[in-house]
Length: 384
Image (tube, rainbow, N blue to C red):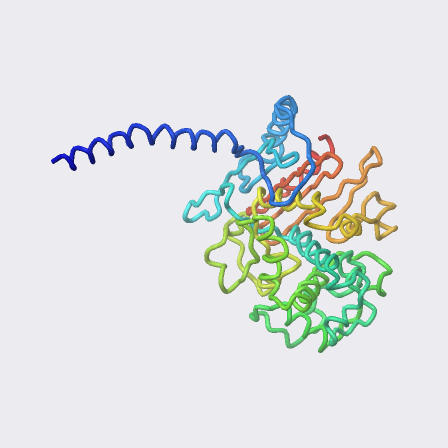
């Protein structure tokens, strides 16, 4: 009986004392966790974003979103952040219209050609580690590649002159299998077998071509000894904690990913939907903010290597106040400053990624229902 009494008293003392300690621990954690601040496991020297700045900018950004992007019918995600601090964040529409699965902060959407920014960064990481050289010939990695002058740099800046893989069927005229789901290796094999003529001589003219990034993905595989998907995880996604970002695999993921829509219903899959490097990365705005933040950290990527991406490579384009670096587009603003960005479109998916380097601001808009409203974010960047 005495033992039972002591046990009851001990339990009572524990019960009245523990909640206070536990409560303090939870409060302390909450006080030091800002859910609107996105961070990465690499050091970055950024100043604190003031409350006045947040209030002013969020009011303007929200007004812009409501007027130009988030009107009736928009389905997607949107974010504006400075130094990782979220200024505005919006999600609307459905990842799957049939099941009514909502798009949320954790819903990966197809990045379309914004994937090129990530592929190019993976190449630059390999350059930093002395795995590859920017001016190395493609044949050093893919000996059967039929264009002997092509370099890694001219793949990145779209000055290779390669034919577009979407036009291979027209070039062949007969014998094309429309039902075959192509892989990156299939694209290379077709180039090796048929030796399609170059559109322009090597490094003489800019021509935006998805084939370039198909070949870059194969070079990443050769240089790392890993499949492109695994290499992107190891080089970028895992180190930055991009937990909602992945490389799409047609046979594994087509029944579970957020779907792509157009007026009248879902976009059908086609034979190019298993090609990687030029597209097929799914991600979220928050994960892409993590990626942009990492470009400010020398512990993630050497600034001297990264600088190569932000060079004007095509004088003809520059006459028109635009250009293309290494995996990133450029537009010259009226004040003479360069705004770097990348847009994307694939089926009904459209995307816009704008890393405003001078302002340390990131603007991202993704949609899974075809619309050009995604690209209105450029206007937001120009008036920012």
